[in-house]
Length: 272
Ligand code: 13P
Ligand code: ZN
Image (cartoon, rainbow, N blue to C red; front, top):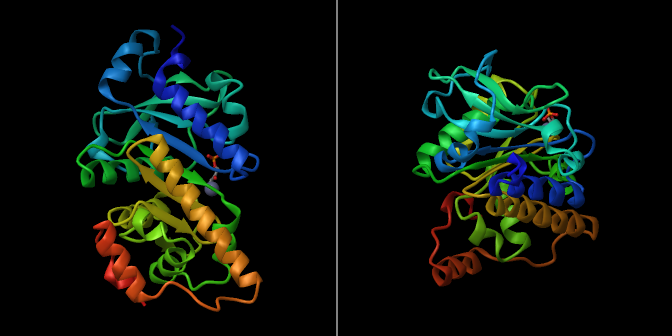
């Protein structure tokens, strides 16, 4: 069986293709990573290269030391992953200190993992702990309307969470803990990874001002669904602002009634 027939690789490819078609991935914009399960890697390990040529991650991720990840390549286009996975994505192994990675499959005509590898791996490490090993997917996209809102709303988690909660009744059910926001920062390094990681302890999504969004999910459906929900709610917000603003909205009491009916705990810091 070709390696790319493995279910987790097929699921990864499906997300990249769906997400490109959503318009969230201009050129090489965005990136995706998956923390591979033991049984999944064991099935294909004999076909993979051995780990050599270790490269620095750019940060330290000790609690995912020794694990394997499927990641998109830096500068590679989401729309091309489905055409030739072996050229555009890679399986990497993390060393036993959590400081270096080695490519053991993929990027066949050259390349390196996404420039956002520090943020991806840091978030994997944090989410592995806080979800008791359940979280597997970290996903970064450049969705138009979520980015547009970062030019007009104050850049804080309360404002963004409340605005997106108001835009569709299901949003607070999907993000009861809220959504994180960080101001503009230089992408691709340890500093933005550290700040994003701190917020990922509390949230499943973090918006990077004037850049894009990071989502974490237990599986591909969940990570994609989080991105889709944020972007759809953002689109409604952009439309409401463009039509002259809200004339009525969901009230605090409505949110509390919703929380009771759906048996969710809404983060009360984000009520108005
Ligand atoms: P990469 O091509 O290195 O994944 O970078 C794309 C991106 O969106 C950076 O934030
Ligand atoms: Zn980006």
